[in-house]
Amino acid sequence: MTSTSPATGSAAVRPGLLLAIDQGTTNTKAALVDPTTGEIVASSSRPLGISFPAPGAVEQDAEELWAATLAAVEGCFATIPEATCLGIAISNQRESVVTWNHRTGEAIGPVLGWQDARTAEWCSKLAKARPDGAELVRSRTGLSLDPMFSAPKMRWALDAAVAAGIDLADVALGTVDAWLVFRLTGEHATDAGNASRTLLLDLDELEWDAELLSLFGIPGSCLPEVRSSDAGFGVTLGSGLLPAGIRVVAVLADSHAALYHHGCTVPGEGKATYGTGSSIMTPAAGPDLAPAGIATTVAWKVGGVATYAREGNIVASGSALDWMAKTLGAPEGISGGAFLTELAAEVTDAGGVSFVPAFTGLAAPYMDRAATGLLAGVTAGSSRAHLARAALEAVANQVADVVEAIEADGKARIDVLHADGGATASALLMQLQADLLGRSVLVADAPEASALGAALLAARTLGLDAWEPESGLPVEPHPLDRTTRRRQWERAVARSRGHAVTPDGSTPR
Image 1 (tube, rainbow, N blue to C red):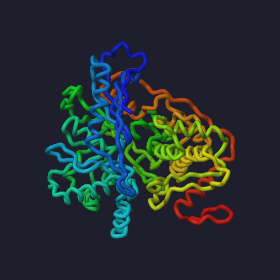
Image 2: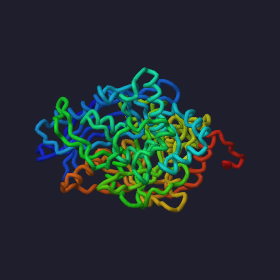
Image 3: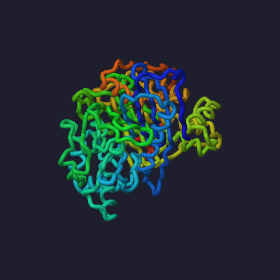
Image 4: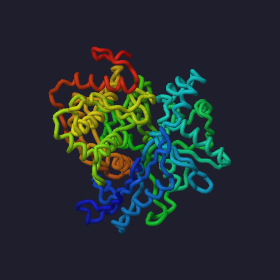
């Protein structure tokens, strides 16, 4: 649904506003933000199509993505045409790969979405052919050799371009931020945080790694320049209602921007972003490797100094809720989370039902692309309400899995979890999250944490008297048998992964 709206109380136009672009998986949002208060004065969003042309394949249209971005921006300026824009901040979906002709600016082929798993077999073959390859990738980048990350997608896109007769000298590659920056300013650049999600960036040097480029067969000449998140990304060329000459001040990947918005800059606190998938992230002391299944990544590079983080990514959270809601007959126009929350309120628990939404396998902390989606524990007494509650519990259990994995080596601890994203509108989901974690969850009062995080960095970069975000609404855990409920989920995940479950319910590893 297309939407454009002024914020409440925005009748008095501020002397200068920041334009925040938040390019997500299912929609693109734009917001005009007061840099001193953090108030969103006007906002606009445009939906995006997503296709699944083959098992494991997830695609979008790069030109549609750009058109939606421009339309959302124009929607903001149309709402407040007299607004003065001080600068632009970008937050974006990560790991998705765009290929374009750097001479003409036209997209080449589809966007390969971050959920896309078509390269899973290719990754497996690479790991067998180069037994040292997976270790090289993890030791240099902090990431696992997994099709979610960008490099395998880039290799696939380059092969497709060559097959189509396109000269590699004309090919530009990048994550979504690089595509937006190029269309906005003509510059081919990415920020260090986005670059750290590609499997190609050396975490210590914060530059493209020659050995990794060779491993994946990717020419460095096709890749964007890696810059600090606040280094500046050119000025707008002008298009429609978007004037020329506006600075693109800051770029942050969406999950990183949310972490920045919450003020989580040192170890001890973390955040979970509930979007199509989910990202659980906490600052780390440095680029040291995290436990298995957890990534070490660059959160941002500001003022020339990198902040590192531990992170686990869940492939299906919001998409799992939407799938279950559609399956249970949700009407058009209502979000999956809202529909399931209302339905799940009819029961006090899931009645023994577990739902594992491994639509394209499982990501963190299992990194098992062979896992399959399943419903377990269904009986003749299971109702639609039980299934709805099982879907909400699936999201909360996956987040709890990642938090436990982040803390597994004793070198990190998330005492308080900040929560943001659309699904946080479900009070039941947030309570389930606190219950299954056994610790407090602070729910952001503004769901647009990614856009506001990028805008906050832009405000500080411009030397403005920027606002300080509020901590959010606390949700405390209820006393319950958390161990039993987590054990039930563990057994369901084991079945999803094809592991045997013994008569006593244990899951041998």
